[in-house]
Amino acid sequence: METMITSAQIDAYVAGGAKLIAAFDGLTSADLRAIPVPGTWSLQQIATHIYDSDLIGTDRMKRIAAMPNPLICAYDESAFNALPGMEAIDALAACRAVANNRQFMAEHLRRFSPEMFARTGIHTEVGKVSLADQVVKYIHHLEHHLKFALQKRALLGKPLA
Image 1 (cartoon, helix red, strand yellow):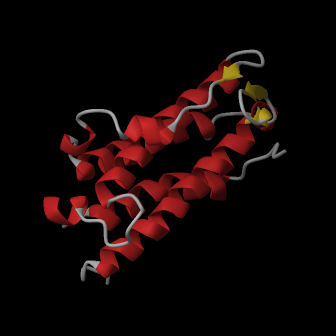
Image 2 (tube, helix red, strand yellow):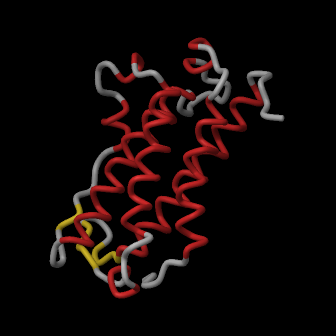
Image 3 (tube, helix red, strand yellow):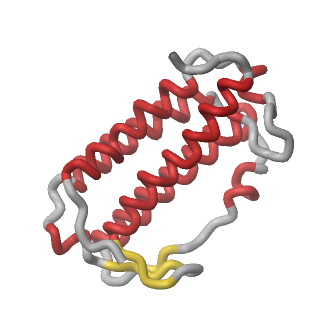
């Protein structure tokens, strides 16, 4: 279990937002709907998933920081992504919202004491998790999906320079 977070990790958490915007900037609606790798999510689905996940992530972090041993509920990412209207969400706006959300959350993270990062909650699927665990998880989660988004973008003939 992680119990410490460095300023470099907080910087990486924030930087993920700009990377996400860059990955989706300039894509057309056809690009976003395309599935260049059969059986995987479209770029649209990746963007909306990261948006949902990031909002859930900041809720989890704030709960752990503010409440004694809170319950952290799991969610079904595929069910969320299948909700009506997900295809109509502006993917780039969702990416910008993620970037803003991370900047706002970082204002808290930068002011938390080392003891705050050791605070824990109980996740309904994995058990005890610390605030530090959640920060690290959401850094890696965005990077994980970003890798696939960049791969799909390249397959569409629109690689980032």
